Image (tube, rainbow, N blue to C red; front, side, top):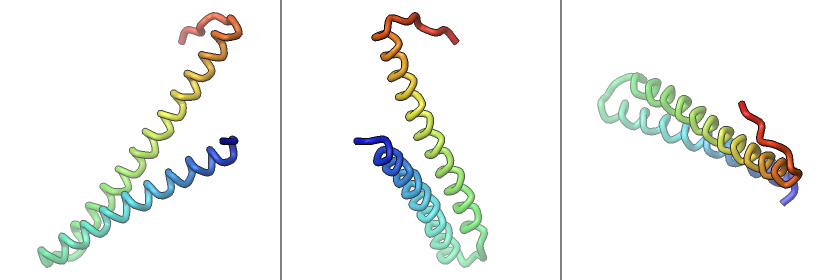
Length: 87
């Protein structure tokens, strides 16, 4: 898979994950408010939780990608005979 397709795939994954996470929390909050007869208290709480969860998922995906790239670079350095870089 070329770089463009890989980047497009990653971008789609991030977008879908964020929309689904926030949307689910929004509708759960709306449903709870309807069942309890409250205004928008649970809608607001669950939407904020959904936004937080979506950004946490984004962070996890980015960190996994960085770790994969780091391992790939380390393997390339080993193949070229360079010493391991200490952090």
